[in-house]
Image (tube, rainbow, N blue to C red; front, top):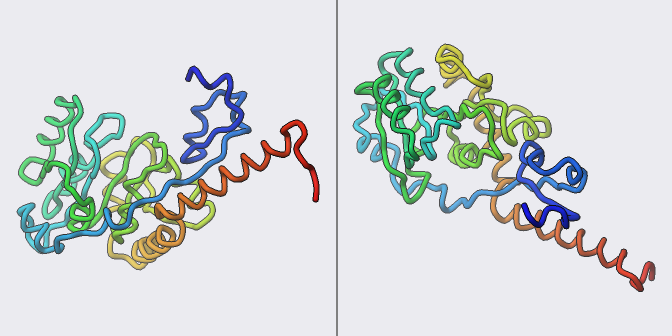
Length: 246
């Protein structure tokens, strides 16, 4: 923050994230969507092995939240929705807990024996491979990187219109089964009811292609390289004594 008065350029991982910059710098902020590491996202275990470790039957439906359990991300909606739906739905939580003991206790109470609270995994694909759907119900996000990881693993995603979701969908079309900000369990359940439909399968396949074609770490490296070159090129042209033509 102490360097902001001297800044002439800025980057953000989404248009939403760019709004955190001071108003006077907004016009100089470029959006560079990040990319995921595909090797980190690939599962090292089979779906059957992972679900067996979770204690699930083949007919159980696993609705997951992957990431840190933090109240600002509204993670308890998964447990509340599973409680609303009943059998055979299970709430799967994978990730660390940060000072949210009361909310964690509430999620466990809501989900009961159908709640599974697991530590982080080395390869996030080993969590996604066991899911039937991933839910991101945050009221706000910078980008929503776990969504891209879910897309890479062809997991149906149910998400609020936050982070980069609106701007990606404006360019590429639907990539998630949408739910409103601060959704009710009934609204999440309505999205879950679409799982397995032709609409949901098309969205999953489309989101997977978008990730492979533009949201990998190598794509981000190329975007950042072009950005730095453009900034330096502009600086050279403004430098006193710089050549301005062939």
